[in-house]
Image 1 (cartoon, rainbow, N blue to C red):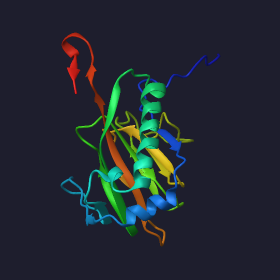
Image 2 (cartoon, rainbow, N blue to C red):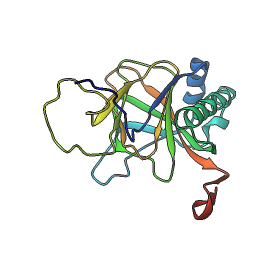
Image 3 (tube, rainbow, N blue to C red):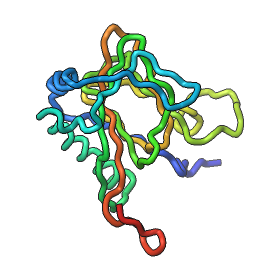
Length: 206
């Protein structure tokens, strides 16, 4: 018997980019922002040592953040045009900074009312991790020899310098505990289609 092909049918793509940004200057501008304590919208979930910027328009809060916006936009364009292969235009609707102190974390959540979401890490660390959860439930809980994209219910990404991750906004994700002695800074954002999309009774203008 010969296995001809395996197709990752109906998969949820997650794109990882390494941006060419002046990450240390980005960090300097992030540290000047006003942060407030964040808590999860989920009833029984909670966050710890997790703070978000008061502004949801942080790309306009400094010259280096403004330059970063252009790089983020280009990466989103690549994800939409080359990975998803959609023809639609798009817009970054909001962007905010997060600050997670040592022993801090953010509960599992998703970004409602949006299409794509992303997170950018100016500075990485082996102890800065984000976990993305599958949108489906397993039929069987069988023993697994090796975890892969077909049998995993979650996937963990470790932050590296200038790492940008883009994924479907409806995928649950969580910031795992910061076990380092350093504060973790990141920038999160959301994306929606822009202009007229669809045809016939499915057409809508955003």
